Image (tube, rainbow, N blue to C red):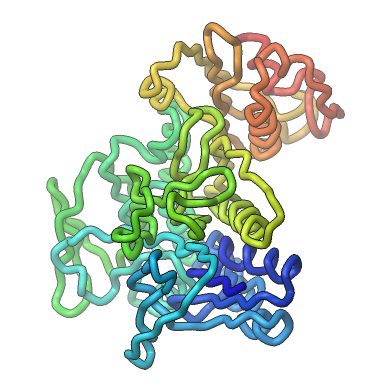
Length: 442
């Protein structure tokens, strides 16, 4: 059997290793657009901030290991431009040699990931303008951060924008954050966003909201960011307004796509075309709360989906059970977490919901350091099913989000939450866990 995998990162190589273990005699060819395999994209902001000293530390497994130890044909600079599902051939260009290539397949896995969104702003070609998705992107930012680069503007107030902002401040830069939305972290409910903005301003970040970037200006290097309401001086710019799935080369294959452009897959990671699978940031994920296909490109999903795709390709049936939309972000001295859906999503879905927000403590109030945390909780008004939890604070946020994510996965009610047997000792919790406090009140 000849298996071709497009993409050499989390989903692609998770799949490859499953196939190698189950079918060691099969031929596996991986076509990677860049030159680096299996790296930690989520660690890139921390390399920029100097928390991670060497970018090579972000590489989980080098290409040579896949080739020499596991017999995988792991190619680099192979950019796929076309898939022919009738002939079962993948076509593209070897970019460092500017040569065409064709590779036949019996089974194909598309794990091409996603690319950062860069709108066609005037001045995009100026030096000092960056995006962040790959190790080379991060290296360029670090190399560009000369002594005279003092003022950095970040366009976008989502996860990556916040993490990059924090790490640039840690590197001694003056940071401005511009977002078209009317609040930072617009994926969260407003009460959470308020606390994110307060933390940003507490750490010297200038927050500009409700403005649309129109252009970048300068001689050879960026000097100004122009919005629909003003101009801002900048020595460097990082654009972090989201990602789009790398699925363009699949447009003439008959493969069905999601509204986001991601490749629609079933629980087996199969697409609508025979012998073609997809996984990771270029594919959809079934949302167990919304009960429909969604697009939430995160490393946790990519690793799971890649493993499941590889198992099914190799003849070992497994299914992706879906996700609930869990994330956690460190931002200076606070942690921000979310799982399930928020109020806006509940409204869009037409769900009859009830929501509460409350201040509480992560552990016993009398134990030193028990600073207040804030939690938002949503439930279905008629069925009592938990729908979502968001939280922000200095400590204990990740624990509550993970417990809530587990409850959401199993479609628990808030009454079920009250009855959970959660660990208690004064340094770690209260007799009633903060989540249970909300479950009792909602």
